[in-house]
Length: 241
Image (cartoon, rainbow, N blue to C red):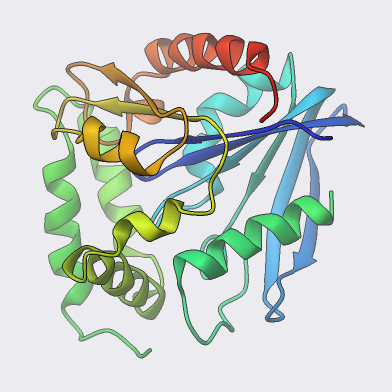
């Protein structure tokens, strides 16, 4: 049986899968999701273990650019753009967490409406709260501009569903089918409810990186990568469930 681990951050995820694949350079590809959306992905490196880096809301695979070269030296690395993001298709009827999960599954097997005119301006202000005071100004501006360029209807529908789950008290249902260890690399920008997460996730473990904002993989890759190294070492020693 293949061995899988899922590591969740605030808006990012890494799927760790056992496989026997080799790729010496970046290999781009396209697979189609269950609802016919083309999903863009790239493969780097080689190894018996594949690390699949999955971006978060209104981002794309470029947000893992500072991890690709680092991890491709030891692992087979896969990055992908979820439907409605990056170079993947926009022809989805409903942008939901379940559909995004299906995108990832399709990629692994193969390796509402428009916004109000000023919505993204508000989102840019919201994302502006995700940084600490000493965040590199150029990086901060790049993220703000990049998020503001995300497809309006994709960002709005995804965010609506995301917060809707919390309002309805159903956010935990996303994790009901997850029966594998979960490692959360987070920062102390906002508090993390570890006790609640432990009630709904199997083998949940929180790793805090202090003094950083919402995008530690971009803000401080020299700290983030070694932290992820330690998580991977532990995950690879954990017996399959």
